[in-house]
Amino acid sequence: MYRHDLAEMDLAELEQSLETMGHPRFHARQLYQWVHKRAVTDFADMTDLGRDLRGALAEAFRISTPEVVRQETSSDRTAKVLLRLEDGQLIESVFIPDTPANTFCLSTQVGCAMKCGFCLTGKMGIIRNLTAGEIVGQVRVLTRELGMLQSRFNIVLMGMGEPLHNYDAVMKALRMLNDEHGLAVNPRRVTLSTVGVLPALERLATEPLMPNLAVSLHATTEDQRDALVPINRKYGLKDLLDACRRFPVKRRERITFEYVMLKDVNDTDEDARRLVRLLNGIKAKVNLLPLNEAAGIPYERPSDARVNRFAKIVADRGVTVSVRKSRGRDIRAACGQLITESTRLRSPAQQLAALLPIS
Ligand code: SF4
Image (cartoon, rainbow, N blue to C red):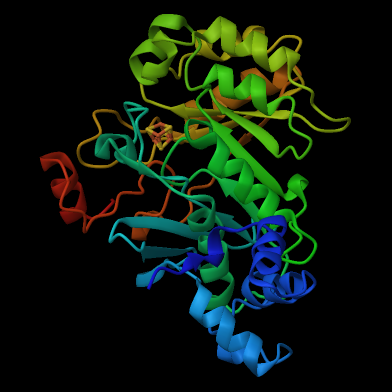
C-alpha cells in the first residue's frame, strides 16, 4: 500500500495532509516536533498522540530516513557518516567539531555535475539530486547518531554536490530546518557554498530566508578558472563577481570566497594581488584552502610558507583572510574528498583513491 513520505513535508504540507484525512491540523506540529526535534520515526513512540491517530498515521505515512552504513571518526574527532538512501544511493555527511561551533557538512546531490578539477566528488559525475527530505534527513541522523539533539550546531552546504544546482530542494530543506516546531535552525547558522550558478544565485538574492554565502572562486583569471571550475565557461568570473557585488549582504556580514591553493597553478604573489583587486567593492573575506591531495587529482599542495605568504599579501591589502586547517584528512572527510567509495560507478581514479591512504 502506498504511504506518503512524511519526511518530505514541511509543516504547511503536513497540516494540509492531516486535514484532508479528517484530523485536526494542530497534530501536525506535534508530529513535526517528534520527527525533526526528537528524531523519532516510529509512530508508536509518539506518545502524546492518541492511539487511534497513531494507527491512522502509520497506515497513511512512512518517514524515510537515511540509513547509516558506516561511521568513521578521525583523530581530530571529525566524523564522516556514509548514508544509504531509500533507492540505495550513497551519500556522505560530515560532523566537524569545534570550528569554533559544531558544524554539519551536508550533501545536496549524489555526486556533482560541476567537475572541478581538484575535487574527487566532481569525478563521480552527477547521479541525482537529493530531495528536501534527504537533505534534512542528514541532520536528523547526525543529531541522533552523535547525541546532539539538544545541541547548537552550524550547517555548511559543502558536501557532495552544488547546492544551487538543486535549488528548490535546498531552499525547501532550509525552510524545514528553520521551522520553530522543528530544529529552528537560524539561517545565519547556515552557509551555502556555490561555484556560481548565476541564475540561481540571482534568485537566492531575493529569498526571504537567506543563508550565508560562500563562493568557490579558486582562480583569479578567466582562463585559470575555466580550467579549474568548468562552469566558469558558462558563467564567467567577471559576471560572478558582479553578481556578488549586487548580492544583499547583511550588515556586519560578508561573502566568503573559498580559494583552494594549488602549487604552481594559482598560488603566486601576482594571484594574491589580483585576488584582492577582483574583490574590490565586495564585502568579502577570503578562506584559503591548501589542497587536500588525493590519488587521481593532478595537483599538489603548496608549501606552508607559500600559503602564508599568499595570505599575508591579501591581509596587507586590507582583506580578511583565514587559512583553513584541514579536518578529517585521515578518514578522507576533508573538502573535495567526499566520494561514496562503495558506489559501483567509481572511475578507475576513484578506485585508486579509495585504496590509497592520504599522506
Ligand atoms: S568542488 Fe564542489 S562544486 Fe566542484 S565538483 Fe566538487 S562538489 Fe562539485
